[in-house]
Length: 283
Image (tube, rainbow, N blue to C red; front, side, top):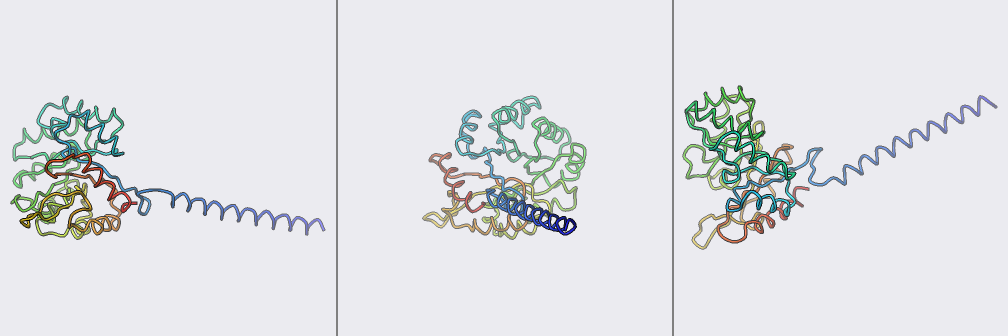
């Protein structure tokens, strides 16, 4: 009887333990289901390129980002003097950090084939504690840039600027330039300029995923003359859903920075509309 009772107790105990395991697993699944802006187990990080608000002061940019519920920002030269001193860059970036924001990158920094100019650019980026310098290196400068990337252990993202830019109109040209060098030299795909250059942003995201270090998010529409002009994201003709699907597919875990370039109007409101369109799609 005692042996049978013990066996019975053990059986009950095992059943309870297994039940607890099952409940724990269900709780974990429930918690995962409640997360927002997550695909797989990586969050989509929505940010703003402060070029969008280039006419505002740093204090006004900070207030706008708080209002938009955005934590990540890449700083344009009017908000962080990339051509100034290292101390000026350190102080400017720290102002945003002190406000609770995360500085993720720069505006597009020109990198000429000049060692002194390159060292200044890298010193300033390091002083600002940038994880990524968004840049346009002169092709002839790339061997020297490669040397500085290794010395400073800094990630670079080459930005494409559309058909007017004969060096890096699209991601394909930026990739061709970056590929022979250190893997820390990669791409910032500007989806709008990519589209204007006749390249598919979603395909580029998939093709260059290995060194995709930043995204500039925007949309375009046609004006009365058939010219592509900036629009609020979701109000243009670009396949924004397809771009987001590609980012999810490659499990992109860096920044998607809105770069609002529409002329005139309230740029904070334009960013608000753009972010409101993307947030639920990114969830």
